Every structure is written in structure tokens, then in C-alpha cells.
Image (cartoon, rainbow, N blue to C red; front, side, top):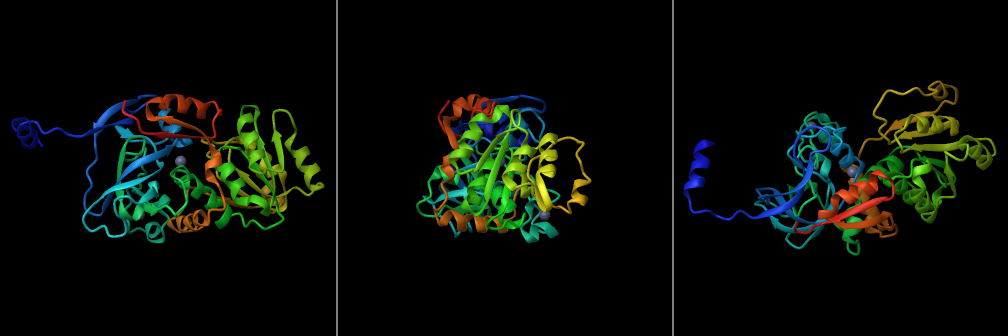
Amino acid sequence: MGTEAATLAAEPSVPVATMAAVVKTAPGAGNVTVMRVPEPQCGPGQVKIEVAFSGICGTDLHVYHDRFRNYPPVILGHEFSGVVTEVGAGVHSLRPGDRVTVLPASAVICGSCEYCRQGYYMFCPVRRGMGHGVNGSFTRFAVVREDQVYRLPPGLSLEEGALAEPFASAVQAVEELGEFRFGDTVLISGPGAIGLLCLLLLGHRTRTIVAGTASDQVRLELAGKLGADVLVDVSREDLLAVVDRETGGRGVDVALECAGAAASVSNCLGALGKLGRYVQLGIVGAEITVPFDLLLYKQIRLWGSVGYSARTWVRVMQILGQNRLDLSRLVTHKLPLSRWREGFDLCESKQAVKVLLYYDET
Ligand SMILES: [Zn+2]
Ligand SMILES: [Zn+2]
């Protein structure tokens, strides 16, 4: 290490290309800033991508506040699309100019545990995802393994491509768990990006009630535009009374908990009818008190849904390839990277649904 540094210092200075990046610089709350970092190098088996759009996610906010495990210094951001600029030795499935999106959760995996072998990377014991475990996408270039990269279907915009990752979380919950059936009445509790992507995916297959709180007005309004049949602001209306009215007292067939709040979990359990189905997508982040016996008395089936698997991404690409859903309808703001803080504030205050950042030199 020391020798290397000495050699570098002795040589005539070779300019190292740098780029701006939103970096978590140190552990603890805050400690996020825009700074210049070296451009990443593309090694064997790797792909270098020029980021086009990168969405701000709840996870980025959690990393900012240090409520989610992170390894500073690290570039934030993990939901992105871009264009391939370079491929490393041995990469044959991609070439420069390809428009792509990336499965960011598997940036570091062992590749050989029972979960990795099934594509369930979320459960790999050594896993580290982009944007908190390793450098992410709030910058100009990202370098990833070839197997993390998915080419965008023709006709799909780079804006939509940036939404593939959160969409994958919705696809796992709706298409692989929950056992949704045409004609079901569904409660989506929590109108954030994941909840609204579930709504988009359910479309006309189900009658859908979307519930939020007083601070969710912008998001509830968008839910209405995206086809929600009933909107409920739980600070003004009794959700269970609305559900009773809308289902003739039966209760909903499926509840999707997307808020990650105790009151929302209780509402979902209460709103479900007998033999109902429950999918937990929100992260509550604390031990909570809920009417747990309802699981038994109503004989509810419950699924936890965390992220997605490689199998989910195959389905994601099939759905996006058919171009029947317009994911870009969730994009409320597009901001240059230099205005990242404004973007974070818009998400925090729930004035935005999805904010996309694009690169600018700062
Ligand atoms: Zn995310
Ligand atoms: Zn593994």
C-alpha cells in the first residue's frame, strides 16, 4: 500500500477522471453531501453504466437518518436506469449503447448459499446492496456485474427503467404472493411508491381501496388518477366503516400493508374478511401492539414480502416488455443531482411520489 502511494507520487501526475456523487461520508444521522469521487473502473465480468435517472427511495432517507444499515463512505441511490458505456473482459450479453436497468440488491452476494442458488439474494448472509452496502447510483457512472443488468425492452423510457426496481417489489407481492383473483376487493394501506405500483399492477382485476393519512393528500390524489376505486384519509374517516360499506360487511379479500405503521397493520387486520389474505410490505421498524388473534379468528393467511428474487425480475421484464403499464405516471419530480436535498425533502414531506435525479456537474 505504502509503496504504491510512493510510486504514484513520484510519477508525473496522471489526471484521474472524477464525477460528482451524493455520498454518505460517515456513520450517524446526516453526514450526506455532494462531493467529487474517482470514476469507477470497469473490471472483467463488469459493466460500466452512465446513469440516466435514479429514483429517491425510502431506503435512501433511512440511510440519511442512519436508520438503515450502511457502510460509509458510500454513494447513495439504487433505483436507476442508464446506458452502457463499457463492458469488461468476458462480458458478451451487453454492449456499449445498450439501455439498461439494474438489480441492485445483489451487488455483493456469496453466489453459493441455498438462497443465492434460487435467486433469493435478499437472504444471502453476506449480501450488500447498492446505495448503502456498496457505491450506488446518485452519480454519473456505476459499475456492476453483468448478471445484475437487464436490457430495457424497446419502447420503454429511461424514466420507466429507473422504476423497475421498486416495481419488482410490487410484482413479488402481487404476482407471487397474496394470491389475488379477478373480482377481489383489495385494501392498499399506504399510498407511497410501492403501494401505488401495486395499484397499477392490479389495475381492473380488483376493486381497490387506497388508505392514507392527512399527510398523504398528494399521493391519494395520484391513487385516484391511477384507478383506485375508493380513497380514504384515515384522519378524517373511519377506515373500517368505509370497508364495511364498500363490501356489504364482508371485509376485503386482500390487504396490502405498505405504510409500515402500527395503526395501518391494525387497520389491515380489521378490514380483512374471514379467510382473508394479508401481505406485509411496509417496514414498521419497531415492536408494535396489534390485534394478532384476528389472524386466527378470521383464519387469515399472511405473507411477508421483502424485495424480490431473480425470478421476479424475469416477470418484471415480461410485464414492462408488453408496455401496457406506464410506470412514469408515478414520477412527480425530476431534479438535477445538485438539488438532491430538495428531492429528499419532497419525499420526506410526502409532497412527491417518485423523485428522479439526473446527473449534473456540481
Ligand atoms: Zn428502493
Ligand atoms: Zn448467498
